[in-house]
Amino acid sequence: MQLVEAAGNETYLHLAAGDDRLVARVGEHVRPAVGGRLGLDVARSDVYVFDADSGAALAAGLDG
Image 1 (cartoon, rainbow, N blue to C red):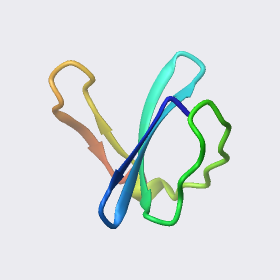
Image 2: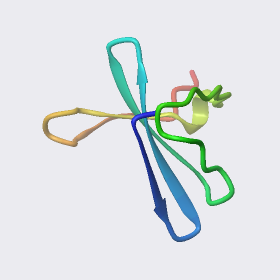
Image 3: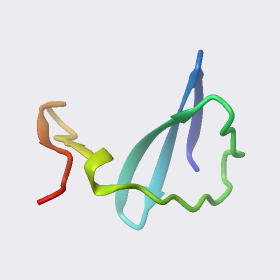
């Protein structure tokens, strides 16, 4: 966990997974500690992929 951003009824978690960087949007009740570890189960249909440089959407919902 690199950064936890509380944003009203949502929380954005900035995560590292090996060399990859991820941002997870979760409910306001999830507030893990920076530097801690977190296990996530994510449905493929809820995954959105963006280009890190441009911010352009590359994929939405990875089912199929």
